[in-house]
Length: 165
Image (tube, rainbow, N blue to C red; front, side, top):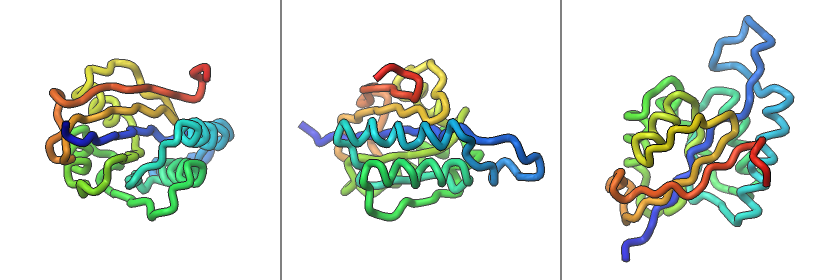
């Protein structure tokens, strides 16, 4: 049986639109986002989930969410900030994932919609909206990230802040 790859697609926490002078890239988390990110990190830790690699968009709201979740799950390695995740497409996200070193079995990828939604829909026909700070878990029955496909993908879970625990 091939080893499995576990992918956690995470949307950044709720961001603030208060300061109209800030670019989209510079928007910080709002009060709700600052509460939701640690909550989702705690839920992942409770399930004993720690990634082998954490890749995130460098946009401020994504970076802050990644740092909070990493701390809560006790991820001690470096978070990789991938410029191409910001304002990309599901095709770019797919390419980023397929370049991950196969020594990593569990990957967290944190980014933005609509790209994340389109990626997940392509792989597992997931048609719900990934709300802010939502986490979608997909398992791939393959040994290499470059071999992930619809055929070996399985939706495992979808969790989000307002979902009952």
